[in-house]
Length: 121
Image 1 (cartoon, rainbow, N blue to C red):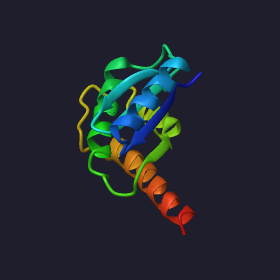
Image 2 (cartoon, one colour):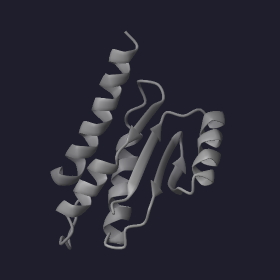
Image 3 (tube, rainbow, N blue to C red):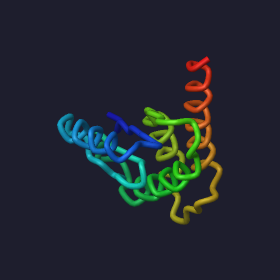
Image 4 (spheres, rainbow, N blue to C red):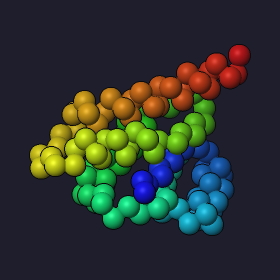
């Protein structure tokens, strides 16, 4: 069973508190809760390398901070993170600029922004 990951970006402080409470009630682990960004995880696949997961979450958080436009974004990023973790499963030396990590994250965020723009038309 794969983990479920949710990314919420560009939250106001009030909205961030609401989502934090909601995720805790739904038994999500909140991995990041800062600067208008929440990254939450549900399930706990024992096959996941925790060190790799923490690294990918740090990269995701760093990238999310750069996308301040577009209003509040809610992204189910489970598919991308699980795919990244499978691709880097045996890596010992991970790099922040590794395309196997950054490209799927960038694509997911960009898709969410474009989807939101298209829905607002």
